[in-house]
Figure (cartoon, helix red, strand yellow):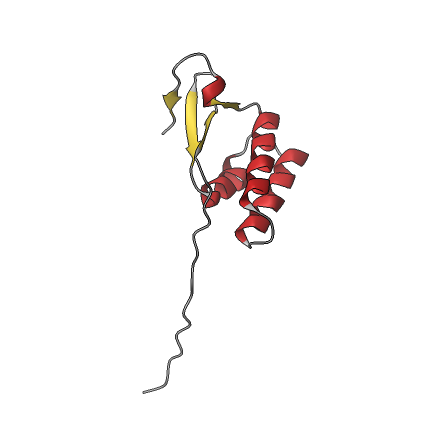
Length: 101
C-alpha cells in the first residue's frame, strides 16, 4: 500500500467584531455582515458597482484575512465601499427595515 501524505491545514477565524447591518434596497431589505468571509463574498459576487471604494475594500479585506493589516482597517474600507454603493447603515434608518433572505 503506498504512503499517502495528508497535510494538516490550520484555519483561523478572524474576529470581524460587531456585525454590520446595511439597508441594501429601496424596499428596506437589510443584510447583516457578521464575518470577514461574508464581506469578501459580497464584494466579489454581489456588489452592485465596481468602483475604487470596492477595489480598496477588497484589498484591505484580503490583507486583513492574511493578518497584514488590522481588521478595523478592512471594516472602515468596507463601510466606505458600502456608502459608495448607496447602502445605509440600518441604525441610521428611521424605520424598521426587513431582513434580506
